[in-house]
Each structure stands twice: as C-alpha cells, then as structure tokens.
Amino acid sequence: MLVDSHCHLDRLDLAEHAGSLDAALEAARGRGVGHFLCIGVSADNAGAVKALAERYDDVDCSVGIHPLDLKPGEAPALEWLLGELNHPRVIAIGETGLDYHYEPEAAELQQASFRLHLQAANVTGKPVIVHTRGARADTLNLLREAALPQGGVLHCFTEDWEMAKAALDLGFYISLSGIVTFRNADALRDVARQVPADRLLVETDSPYLAPIPYRGKPNLPQYVREVAEFLAMLRGESYERFAEMTTDNFARLFPLAHLKR
Image 1 (cartoon, rainbow, N blue to C red):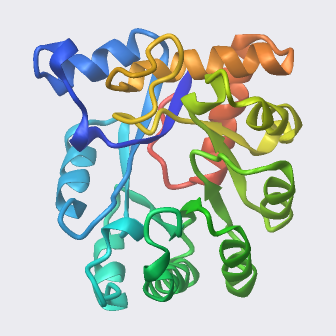
Image 2 (cartoon, helix red, strand yellow; image 1 turned 90 degrees about the horizontal axis):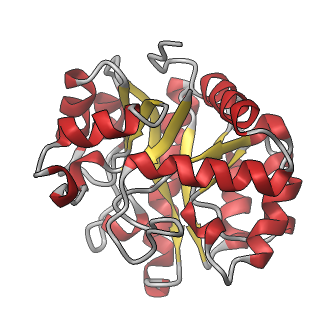
Image 3 (spheres, one colour; image 1 turned 180 degrees about the vertical axis):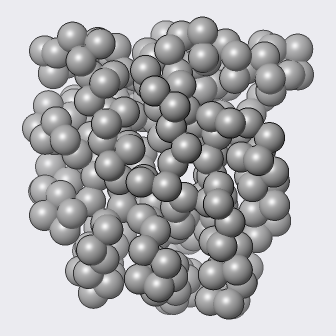
C-alpha cells in the first residue's frame, strides 16, 4: 500500500478521467494507493478539502494558508485556524511556510503567518506541513524557535542535504515528489539516497510536478507509484518494502489519519 502524502484533490485536472474525481481516485487505488492527504492552501479552500475528506473514507485533509496565498498585509487569525483544525478529518496544519523565490517583499508577512501556524501546532499537537523555497535560514530558525515535539514534514523537498539534515535533526520528515525523477535533479537524488528509511514520505503534489514520463502533463495521485518506484530503485530497495516503509512513516507522523491497511 502507498500513501500520496500531499495532493490537491480540489484542483486536479480530471480530463483523463472524464471529469470524475471518483474515477481519478479509483485509478490511483488500482495502482496500490490506499490513502490520500488533501492539502489546504487558503481560507477559501478549507471547506472544500474538509468536504472531500468527509466524502471519501481514504482521504484526510489539512488546513492552512500557503505563503503565496496570504492576503496582502494580513496574516490569518489564530482563532480562525484553531476553529478549522477542530475537525476529525483534519489531521495536519498547512501547508504553511516561507517562499521568498516569488515574493521576497512579503517576507515579514509570511513569517508572521508561519509563526501563527506553528503556534497552532503547539496548541493542537497536530504536525505541520512546510513549504519552503528560497528561505532556508528563516525556515529553520522558525522551526527551531517553535520546537514542536510532534514535528512535521518538509514537503516537495528541493533543497540540499545540509538543510535536510537540519530538518531531520529537528524531528521533521522529508517528502519527495516527482521532481526527484527530473534529469536535472542530481543533487536532490543525493538527498534521497541519504534520508533515513524511517523519515521519508512520497507525494505527487498533484496537479503539479508530474514525474517522468508524464512531465509537462497534469499530475494525478495515481502517479505517486512512479515516484515510489523510482525512489525504491534509487535507494536499492524493493518497491514492496519501500511502499510499506513510507506508509508506516505516514502513519507515525500523522497518527490521526484514518488508514485502513
């Protein structure tokens, strides 16, 4: 059994499945994907991801504000976030974090929002899903400042081993997406070989970042199989063992997940 630990089911391009999310999920299940974590990115889609988790037994969700979805000059309210997190299918916080690549001028606002999400993590005990790009030092500093006992995950990881090691030392997991299959991802593959077996997750981040051989096409949860097969080969492990290992890791990091194994 595989878990797609990070997907945006409310944003999928469903043309391949005649517009049917049911069919898209069934296609993934047919390839051994037994669970999906649908990610919140804004106040606007919090209701949508919760509704999907209520609709499907094998879908859980998270709620949070992506750093690039922040309203100008306005961090989310802690009261709002805690209210949204108080739901049996919301098993994590985020995605949150910092992205200076696209909006370096919003660094202060992003940091305020990230701190608020980390505060909510301390209040609820739920793990955080962290997006980071172009903000290594500040991301790590804020995670150290929060000192979350339950940790979380750096999703769609694209940084170097130094940052991965620092996050691992803080109790975080590393999640890899289809980017690891890209031809220009040698440095990321070096990271993938070194992440301890008990701290690795796999994801699609669908509808974005489809793996080889689907690069350039809309990504779908069924393609997490390609990511897992590639990583198993890269690490010299059997696919079956790798799938079991990453599913165990998901269950450990997200103890509230409604996994059926």
